[in-house]
Image (tube, rainbow, N blue to C red; front, side):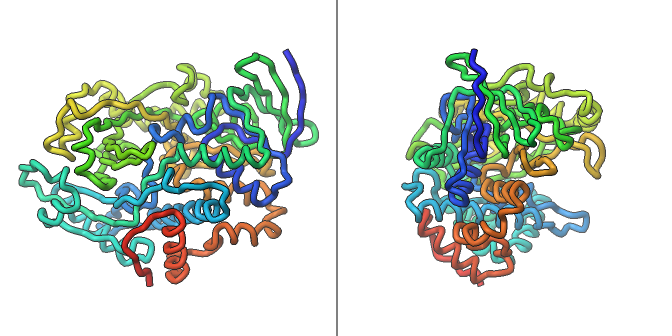
Length: 499
């Protein structure tokens, strides 16, 4: 057993879309820095970033109803939708920069244009959708959104959903053509190919077992080679923990004060995938509905056109499930071993608060295929069981922490935990996740390398022209960026005017 020690500038733990994005940004900003990546699995993008483990919705808040909250007076708070949309625009600009610089090629292998739609049933939900449409359609970021409750128009938009619909319950939808389907697995693999070509050392089948601080303030990472069993100690001035559900355990091992009083709650997902090409061809959109009462936001039902391996497919879901694993390829003891003296009260408080969520997950686990088909038939009345198979998606670990809302509050977003001195950062949480990766990683860079920001800002602005600017308040810049990214990424669509 070797205990070889090696020094480097940056260590990235986990070969998912977040590490790929951070590595790619740093390579542009400081090409001379040495970067090493350690990944437990045999390839990049095999966990949450994998195309079969997430919905592939380029989350821009165009269709996700849980990003627009109805206030008590019936008005709609669109602030979260605006934030997420602006963050997705940042990702699109960086991807365009990489394509224009020939650092990655063939954008159609990871991004395709697809209309994003919201679909509701019943008078109360229709009123909500109308109010949401009014609030969003006046905003430049959501220009081009259409609303209809006319069955004939809906047959044009969503023929498969309207086919065989006999219920008299009123229905309505919004549609916007500037949505995307993103294959985050393909994007992750492309970015790692680019990093490998630029002298980044990527170590697959290497498991990080411990992280501890050294006397000079660097971080020592204990890494096991899973093929040979040998152990190496790698030290770096900066460590990023981007290992999905595995991040919490490693963050806890770092011992930084910011890692205390944080827990994780794992939620697994299942999708139904259509195996009948005739049915797949009848649907061309991502259509999001409303979450059932008592259901968590990440289980909003949606019927999605996906492009995977240059083939069009149709997915419906997600159905939530429960597994104590924090990763799809994790351990059954993940949840248990994440409970520490400093977070046990936080975890217990969450358990008491989230009884309805626990009950909901148990009900979801118990569903038969036919019961899942019944839920699908709310979207596709004529859906036939033999046309659909079940696919197990990735694990999501929702963050539990003490907030102003009380002890043990379950968070439904993406969170970055950074040490006070910025020397180590960990990414936790779930959606919108991958879609906002570039924004999130720029925040990590800002917190971790404040002393370099002035020097790096011109390069960041070259990569992301809207950096530091609100696109919503600058319709001309939005128009310019929208046109150029659509052209570079091959998202040909009807031209929108944002002013």
